[in-house]
Amino acid sequence: MSKPLSSGRYTELLSGEMAMITVGFEENKPHFYVHQNLLNSVTEAFAANYHYVKSGLKDEIKCIEFPKMDAKIFKMFLSWLSNNDRAQELKTQCYTINSLMCVYDLRISVKCATLKMDTLYALSGAMNQNANTFVETIDSMLFFKKYSEYSNKAISRLHTMLDEISELTNIELGDVGSLLKVYVKTVNWGNKKWQNRVIDSIRDKLYAQKDVLDFDLIAYEFEGTKNTSLCDDKLRKFCAAMIYYRRHCGGCPLNADKKLKAEVMERFLTKIDGFMAEYLRFEDEYQTEFPGELPRDPRDRDGELGNCYFHFHKKSDVCTRGMDLDA
Ligand SMILES: [Zn+2]
Picture 1: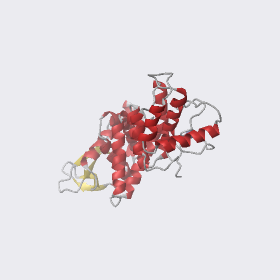
Picture 2: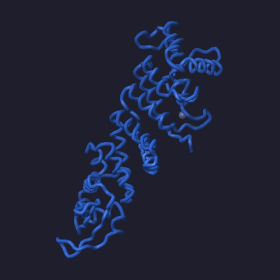
Picture 3: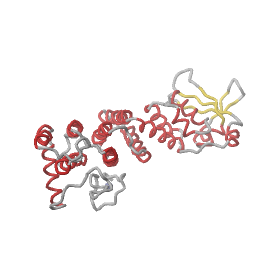
Picture 4: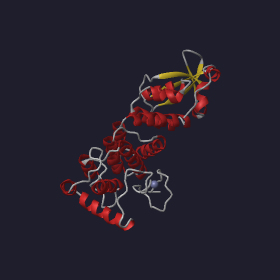
């Protein structure tokens, strides 16, 4: 993201000649007067495309037109451009995710790399604040994917954008329930990078709070990922590991020493579609890997199971958490 401008530099940019920029298709197009120095400080796109027009203010003025631009979005760009602390400006204005996504797109027409970084910074902030905005963003992406005649390019841009945001985001999206909601979305989206990260966050949160995934949360995960085949989903594996651990070692804060009883196990195994197969498969795998040993706490990423036990990559691969498996 961009650093704040010094006051000297800022004054310098707000001097000199103005340019006139018109946006939109209408007859009375909105137009804006902007310092050329300011525009030229972030991109060469304007300087290369000016033409001269007669103006009421002066005999001639440098002008540039953006017929496809939405005036509201262009105003956001200008207010970003005119602020001496640009990165913070976008972030503190509380813009909607949708309008920030439009500004993210705008950086292509204005060829501005710093605008891109600042927008991503603002988006990651907005998405970190709550899980719902993130879920909505993926929803709109999935919507466009469904009706892909709209624009494949738009989808791939959104995809890239979310990917770039994931580099900036720690996925601190509220409680475990919210994280699960995000997880189910990322499964539909098909982004393993995010899935790894959300699983990490779920493990960390449960471990720090000495908490477990309860029946409802596990049921939600299995319902949300019902289209994945057996062994293909790592959070399903984590759920199985959680119950396996509780069956043999306890681990629930309310009954610290209480191991799950047969009747409680029965509920998990029979009332959640797909859980029994996942559980038995996990039990087999675990006993093959650690013969005769008690289960390890699956929540502990620093423990013996390790960081990558529930990651979507091969054991032998170097973990980057962000690795792209489709590449
Ligand atoms: Zn890993």
